[in-house]
Structure formats: C-alpha cells, structure tokens
Picture 1 (cartoon, rainbow, N blue to C red):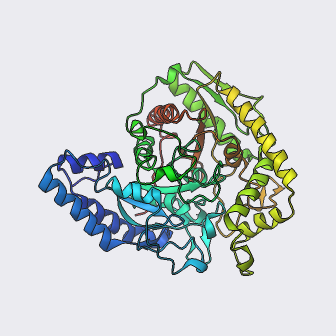
Picture 2: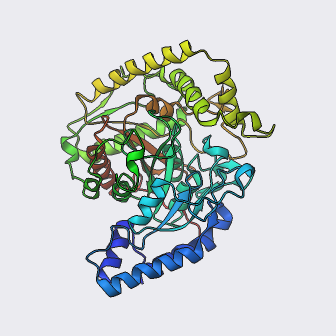
Picture 3: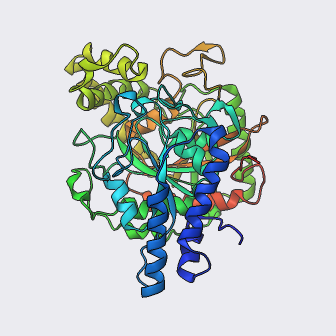
Length: 479
C-alpha cells in the first residue's frame, strides 16, 4: 500500500475505506522506531492508547459508516511537550516536571482528539520551551533531520523534526518569539502563527498578549489549515480564553486559490535593518527571483521603507512582562542550573521599571499601526524565516553572525520576534535547500485577522514552487 502523501489524504483514505486508522498509526509508530533514535524528536510515546483509539475509529466506521466521522478521524498527530496530555507525561523539558502526568488534556489536545486525531507521542523542546535551540538537560538535543549535528531550531523543534522526518504528518507547536517559525524554517516544513486570538489557549497566564500562541506544524499549507480548523474550534472550553474571539473555524478547511499573477507582494530581506547574515540575504534574493520568474507577479516590490528596527527592544521589554506573569510563583525555587534563557529574561524583569514597560507598549502600538499601513497596498509581505542558517546545536545560539558577537539567546531572532510584536499572522514556508543541503524558508505575512486569505496566498506560492526543484519542500534522506 502506497503511503498517503498528506494528512488530508490520510483522512480521506480512511473515509473511503482505502486504508485504516490502525494501519496509519502503526506506520507512524514504526517510522518513529526507525528514525527517531538518530534525531531524538519524540521523547514520550503512547503506543497502547494510540492503537486502541485507532481501532475504535475503524470500528465506528465499520458499524456506522463514514458519513459522521470527524475531520481527522484516525490521523496520527504528535504533541509538543509543553502542552498537557492526559495520562501521558508532560515534562516541559525539565527535570522539575519529570513525573508530571496530567489528569486532563490541554484545550488544543482535547480539540484534536475530538476531531479524531490519534496522539502517538510528545515532542522535544528546550527547557520550559524557551529558546530557539532544542536542547534540554532531561532528554538532550534534537538534531536537524538534514544534519543531526546541527540545530533544528526551537522551541517547537521536536515537532518540526518529526514532521520533516515523516513520523507524523501533523504536530502541534507554540510561539513566543518564533518558536513555530524558526524550526519550520530550519527543518523544511510549514508552520502557521495565527493572529492572536484565533487559536484558544486556555493555559495562558496573561489575559491579552501576542505571546503564548499555539499553532499547527505540517508538511503542506493545506494540511496546516486543516489542523487549524480543528484547534481553532470554539467548543470544548475555548471560551475560557479571553482572547478567543468569535470565529467559524471550519472555514479553514477550504482555501481559496488566488492567481499568483494578480497578487501584490512586498519583499524585505531585513525589515529595515535587522540582523541577517550575508548568506541568508543571498539565498533570499535567489528565491525571490525564482518566485518572480515563475509567478508572473503583477507587483513584487522590495519594500525599503518598512522599518521594524525598534521592535527587538520592544520585544525584550514585553517578554519580561510576560515572564513575570508566567513564573513569579516559582522563580525563587529555581536551582542554579535552571534554564539560562528563562532566568536571563526573568532577572532582567526584576530591574525593569513599569514606566519602561509602558513606553514599550506605546512603541508597540506605533509599530502595529505602521505595519497595518503596509497591507493597505499589498496582499502579503515576504521576509526570510531566520537571519542565519542552521548552526551546530552544541552552541545555545550562534556565537557570531558575520563577525558580530551575539549577546543573548534572543539577539539573533529579530526577524521572527519583531513580527511577534506587531501580531500579524505568519506562514513559515519552505523554499528548497542551501548549498550545504540545509533547508531554507521564508515568512509570508498578512494583515491582522486576514488568516484565511494569507493561508490561501501561501498555498498558491507553495504550488508555484513545486515546479522548481530549488523552491520545493525538501525531504531529508534518512535511509
């Protein structure tokens, strides 16, 4: 039996009786057995429950037909290890939570199960899910599937690696300053950071913020949109998140197909002057030239007056504010070897005044309005996913970029963290490989709350790229 190429095809094959949930789950578990030992993406498994749930979906189809099956019935999915899973340990990548076995699923997991998805395991993260290199003292490092010595990014690194290595077509992630987008770019998969409030997050600790967002990781834009239609559903307690506004989530199951030649796309390699390596700039220019040649665009403009150079400083202040809200109850109990990324931000917050935070909030509003004006003219903006290509994971972050010393774990992530500040929806889209065989990706950004239109545009660009091997989604050779 030929494997189904996408999650959507898997779900359709189950409905049509061309495969079974049991077969899909068994294939996923066997794939994890075969490739995970060299990558360390999946750190907890739920084989028995997964097989039992798959058998139950097959029995339901046999006894009651396919008409009433939910949209992901029998499709395997992996869950990021900072999202609670009932009866399956949720460690946050920290020895402090090694024995934490939640009594209930997080909302995002409950919605996936209700839609029929079968949870096969949990994916690795940096400690407390803070940082863009997936290494922690409990499970160690997750390697890039294209070169396991190199970083896969983070913090949703295990999810990106698992999807890239085809352990499952779908995995969950979350995003503060790039935690969905960076690993997607480094591993050659698709991720979606929705407008704040699209995906309910009942576990958030701050009532309203652009941080602590959750989202899908997939191999295609259409699969990411399908998963979004499930995790953005407002049932099963989604209303407990004060940011979750009214939304018809099912709409994401059918994307539009805009004509690329009719799109107006803005392009920026550094958002006004943020840190981007010369290597990344050259790769980005090449990919934009190829897209332009393939797409017959009405306008694909290099937008030189877009300036988000203040956004990293704003991000550092807002990040401190969020960290105090998240961790104030436990900060005094952290051991000396606790995550340096979390501690660095929390300690900085102790020295920051409320006035400094207020000034950052005011500047954030100005940046949001500045970004909004761009989309009065353009349908989408394209920028690189990350300012550097994957480095060796033994470094917490790249020591230098083109000779510039990197001072902390956030100082090389400005292309993603700046977009967190303004809160626009972003698709991380893979566009081939660099000369060393490592994935290269871009961020496709749309207007706030224009999520469906943005996903449709990204899907059109993805289709466009399939005609050029240099733009197509890369697949690692793990055999």
